[in-house]
Length: 161
Image: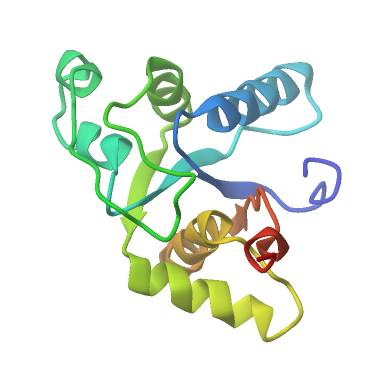
């Protein structure tokens, strides 16, 4: 991404998030690129979650980091079945804190609408990836900068029956 968008500063990178391994890895990569000089600054990270289980979204509400680390939510069923945890992992919180990022949760209706929108143009995302895309579109309307969504899997696997 840093190479592909070398002429534009990335404002936000939206990542579908469950345990936050990918979010933390992307954050580390951008920190290293900023320190080495190929990019001017790291982008803000956004944890995209399903509203059925959104521990990072809930965790970032209280201002105290200790309270954020102790957050626990009760999850429910969702079309984005590969997302959803009861607790935010520290590595994800750390990535969000370091980048000045945030977390945003979307409901199943928004997820499925975003699952269908790019499919009509030939890009089939699984619902969990559509979570990031839906959040990225919403962030793009308000950020004024370049917002990128990470897609982690194709929707083709859901068509096999």
